Length: 104
Image (tube, rainbow, N blue to C red; front, side):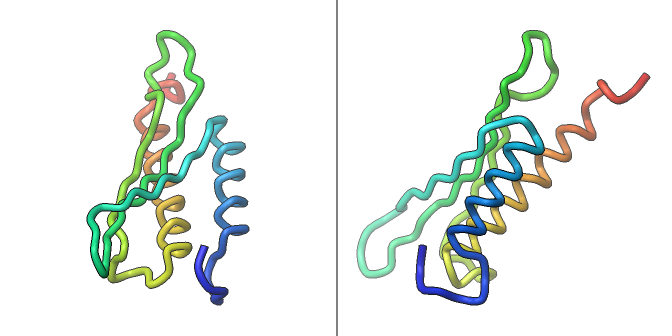
C-alpha cells in the first residue's frame, strides 16, 4: 500500500487473509475508513471474519477487530493491517476456546 519496506506488504496481507479464510472456513475482509479531514487525517482499520454457520450453532457469524491508524506501534499502514490480521486470528481462537463442541 505504501513505499517498499522490510516489513509486510500487500502480498503478505493477501496471503494472510487467504490463510485465515482457509484455516477458519470463513471470508476475511479488511476495510480502511478515514476519520477526519485536514493535513493529517486519521483512519480506522477493520479486519473481520465472516463464518458460514449452521442454524443452532453457538459460533458467531462474524468476528471483528478494529484499531485506529496512525498508531505508535506501526509506522506503515501495511504493518498495521498485518498486525490487525494477527489480532483477528487471536480473537477467533478465543471463540473456539469458548466453544463447547470440543467438550464431551
